[in-house]
Length: 365
Image (cartoon, rainbow, N blue to C red):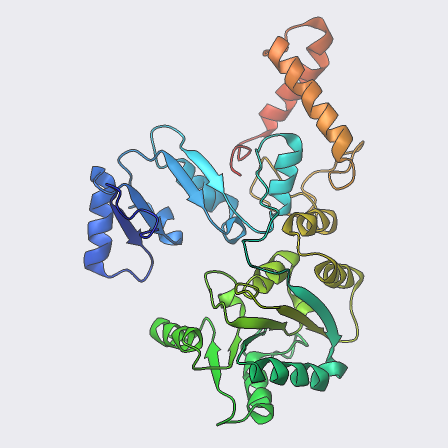
């Protein structure tokens, strides 16, 4: 952000949960007085004490990392509703449903940045682990780096998934010092230790980064060309696609390897097959909508079957939904209050719905 604003008369501040007291105080005072033009931050921006002089534009990156109510709090931090841009590589089912209903305008970036190549994605069962290790050695021999991501830090008796601690021991045996160097990053590390580990990997001082999904966003290491996701059946489509996006940031060939057990549910198999078939986040979101449901546009549920359409399916009936939406817009344009005789039934349906509704989240994308 600072690079983009260089040479402009714009003041930028930052606010995160780890901001020091002096920095936090300066940021809060600056936005309240209007002295700060752009505030960059994390979920800390949602806190009640964060008050803006005149909030006009909100950009929410990685939309799927926020809940509906969390995003809604930013909508209310001003005397009038700000303009909003939400960004994500994989729209949540609720967002896709809002798009189909015409409540959200969407711009799709369907081209890779110049110089980048599509990431090749492969599915290996655990029985092919030695083959996967051989491939990692080949990439490291080319002076490339590797991520290995686990769903758990420690093993669990309730869940039969790979865990980071056991994975570290295994990889340390198969990729021993001094030939190979391994860094570790997960949510239970102290912030300074986590940052030190990430910087070690960024500087090329570690060949392998063993991590949990904390590296899902905000990590940019162009030299990393392989993403191995252990127990990939444990992750949702959005997370899998986000994790895959940590590689492919340089000019070379990049790979994502999805490791799973032999027994996969029907939905897990569909997710894995979709990941191997496409790099298109919107296509993956459409499958996610089909598998998980649309959520509740008038509530906070971001997926699932909050309501049932008896005559249409959001995942498969896109064209008829679009025609219906256009007809509804035309009716409301010509008869906003639904007073005409032909619209009496629609008015009655609207009134029944509004009596039932307590809080309306339908404008929160």
